[in-house]
Amino acid sequence: MDHLKWEEIRARAREVSRQAYAPYSGYPVGAAALVDDGRIVVGCNVENAAYGVTLCAECGLISSLVAGGGGRLVAFTCVNGNGEVIMPCGRCRQLLHEHGGADLLVDTPEGVKTMAQVLPQAFGPEDLSKVTEQATR
Image (cartoon, rainbow, N blue to C red):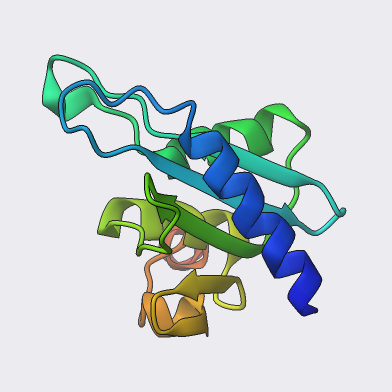
């Protein structure tokens, strides 16, 4: 993936971080990803007074992906309110793996890594299908 596309993805993440609803933590987050059909999907965090039901930026991004017709994520970035690249939490890494797989390119503070490097030995749909296939034999 060329440098210009990464800059566009990062710019979209920074832009959407300004839409975050973060009155409790004061920590706005924006996420953006390139989809295999060329679209860029975005999401921002949406907090709630009941902290446990806060939605991470990645949740909004995945919802946008699915609502927009689906597809596979190819490249992903996440930024804080200062525009600095940050790592997605464990829950969100799982969401990203589900919709991008092991080859998804993830922008990290240490450079671009594959999802396999970010979430080694990930649990995914193929693990569920193995059990289902064994049960039907």
